[in-house]
Amino acid sequence: MDKDILVSYIPLYKNALLLTLKIGWQGIGLSMIIGLAGAAVLHFKVKVIKNIVGIYVELFRNTPLLVQLFFIYFALPKIGVNISAEICGMLGIGLLGGAYMIETFRSGLETIPVMQSESALSLGLDKRQTFLYVILPQAFSAVVPGLTANIIFLLKETSVFSTISLMDLMFTAKDLIGMYAKTIECLFLLVVFYFIMILPVSIIGMIVERKTRYAEFGD
Amino acid sequence: MKELLKVKHLHKKFGENVVLNDIDLVVNKGEVVVVIGPSGCGKSTFLRCLNGLEKVQGGVVTVDGLPVEPDKKSIIKLRQKIGMVFQSYELFPHLSVIDNLILAPTKVQKRNKEEVIREAIELLEKVNLVEKKDFFARQLSGGQKQRVAIVRALLMHPDILLFDEVTAALDPEMVHEVLQTMLNLAKSGSTMIIVTHEMNFARAIADRILFFDKGEIVEQTDDVKAFFEKPKTKRAQRFLSTFSYS
Image 1 (cartoon, rainbow over the protein chains, first blue to last red):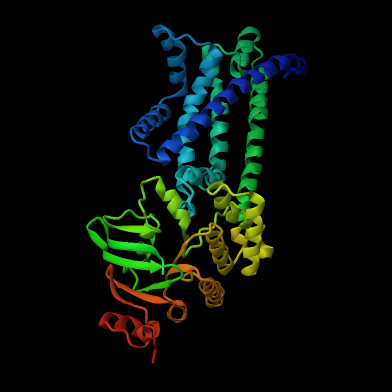
Image 2: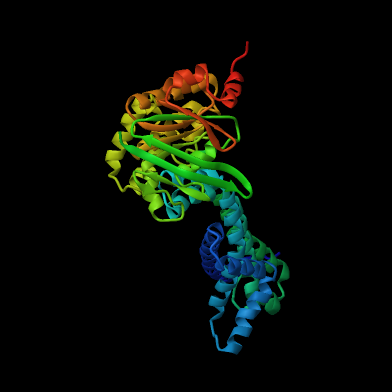
């Protein structure tokens, strides 16, 4: 492995990392909003909408991100919807992640005993307040491990971005290998950069888990 | 005497199973009504119908003249008039004791936070728990949790308090501290409906006894002493005899 080559490639990888992070986290943000809204719909059993949410979850969990992304990037323009590759990437991660987040949040909400709601209701809280002040905060601590796993999963899934010519980590590595054939160096940097990108999520996830569980379970 | 709670022809079914059959009851202000009866006789369900946690299939419950209707907006106002304490305490585990106490008064009644905290501390002092105000529920004993739950209900200034087997999950010493708290409430003139299996306590606190069996009020009397010495109905006699071993 040539050290000089590694050093000279680093700025390119850094740019790719920043782009991956930017689109990845935008998508993850979107997925959490979808997840929370969808889980609330399922929790409150909102008629009709809950069925739509169910179909959405199954559709996006049971098809590959690559296919979803191709659909958004190549098929939508055919019916007159033109969006940039970056927005496509964000939508892809956001919609796929949303399906996973809904399931994670829903299972978190289900761990809270019905009696907790009844106790809140009998104190005069309405359904919205019960959800906001009693159910959701407790569900959150139950959900942190699943949430962490989802975020890690989605950050890894960003490697599909290269197929819609976004210059993410994967794209940069493939591009450099194609041009200069320094395969070992390129792949080495690829592993290192993905690792650097995702490791903090695991660590922060563990810390948040400990903090949010303190009230209920202690140290 | 002012009629506070009125139940007329209350019917409750779970599917085909009749749980409450044509219950009538009037509770006056300041009265302590104790509901006893074998497990599965409908006493807990009866309490849950009173604050709209259960939908009913017939009859009406009114509190202060206002009907209890679980699906209507008015239920939010009504539940503030009816406090409820559960067997399993149901403190909110993610909140400290003080935050458990002030949640509903500040969010539902929009009262001033400092004022509510002051009142909460006063009440905690009365039940000897003021030093626990920043603890979480998991750090309290069962008896302490139940006293916090009672204070939490009291802070909403309800007209009437419902107690659903609040000592059933506690060991004997803790039972005593919780029952003492309830006796003090009764002395201070609170209107209470209590479901319990503690017969000595029932005898000490009750102004009126309701004996439930198979979803019906089998015996109802203001003469509490006479009831425990010699109940009128065969069913109540049989039930009470199970509490003595001789």
